Structures are given as C-alpha cells and as structure tokens.
Length: 300
View (cartoon, rainbow, N blue to C red):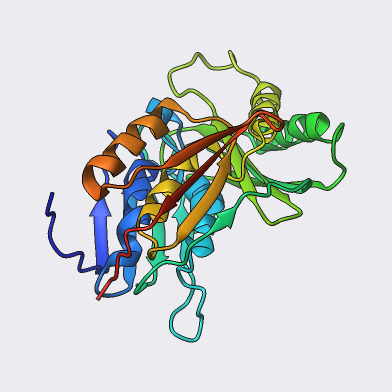
C-alpha cells in the first residue's frame, strides 16, 4: 500500500450531500499531520446530521482534535499553531450547504502516550444547535439534557446556537431544518469523551420532541462514562492508529469496550504496519488495556 506523498497546503473541497463533512474529516485528521506542509482545509457540505452513523464536524473538534494534541501534534506553539476546526456556516442534512475550516500543523513525529487513568468526571460542556427551526427548540433540548446530568454532577453548561437561513457567514445555515445536541465531559486527568445526537431528517415533523434529543444525548454520554475508558467509542481507532505510528516506545491506552469497528481497524493495522496490540482485560474496572510498540514513523 503506497498512496504517495501527502502534500497538504491550502485545499478546498465540496463534499456534496452523500456524506457529511465529518466522514471526510475522520480520515483527514489521522493523516493531516504527516504532510510536507501545514494543512489549511475548507470543506463544504453537510456539517450537522447523523446519517449513516457519521460523526459531525463538532464531534471531530471536541473528541478527535484533543487526541491529536495528546500525541504532540501542535504542542510546540512556537513552531506552529495547534490543530483547529471552525464551523463557518451550518448545513443540516440532507441538503447541507455548510462550510468548515480545518487547520492541522505538520509534525515530524508523534509522542508516545500513557492514557490509562480515566479519572473522575469534573464537568460537562455542550452545544444545542438548530437550523431553520424555532430558537426555543435548542433551549428545550439543553434543559432536558441538563436535567439528566445534574443528578450526577453540578458543573454542566450547554450553549444554545440558533441559526437562520437569512444570515450570511457565522450564524447562517443551509436550506434544511435540523436540530442537534453534542455533549463533552472532561475528567480530573483531562480525558475527554463526547456524545451527540440529532434530529432524523426523514422523520415526520413533530414526531421527535427536542426534549427527547436532549435526554438521548445525555444518556449516550453517561453510557460512555460508564464504560470507563479514556476515549469515547468513536475515537478509539484514531488513538490506536496514532499509537502504531509513534516512536519505538511503548504506548498504552485504556478503553471501555472494543467496538466492532475498532476490531476491524486492529486487523488493518496489523496487515499494514505489522503492529500487534497487546490486549489485557481489567476485570476490576471492566475495561480493556491496549499497548503496543510504535513503528518509529518519521515525517521527513
């Protein structure tokens, strides 16, 4: 498998409406740091929509970019700014018309990690985002989500963001109505986990209440916390891939449970990099500890 040299630079791409921009970003985040220059990427399309189990641009920002920083990408701010993702315009499924900007600095090599202590959850932050629907809907979703999480932790803050078709630039959105809520928790050891849910664009109008979305998002986040890992389920494969590309030193990570997607990824990593993960089940915490020796990849 020899895909060629990753050049990077200034790149613009229209993702269409078949896939969300998050689907493209999942792959780009994992290799953007390995280019010959810094990556300045602009993507246009569906920014908010959970079709085909795809993550949104906000999920990449809240969950995956912190993992990049854990591996040392953009840590030396004297050389280059850290990775950054900004949503310029919202575009709900199915018609999209949103726009995001993603910046990823070049990194010569990664740093090994030891993410084995999940810590205790100290705060929850989130966003309830709407497009072309009454601004009371995100407020109702946020209130319902806080009602669930406040039973367990007091430090909960959810921002509401109502976007209108009539606005240009920030605060504007595409032609499709949509509602989404994304929640991120941070632990005492600075581990983050994220969960999101959104309104089904094919569902009948009024069949799903904003409160239902808020409760669902809060429940999904609490389920990720219950599993006890240091990363959420959707970000497992990214963390394990970067572990394979680390210097020839041991990296370790604790996850709650191995998803089917992660199992398939581990098989690919073994076939491409020749890296076999050591998998140890922790019966006390009901978590899984994975470790490996990096391949010593250098980005010259």
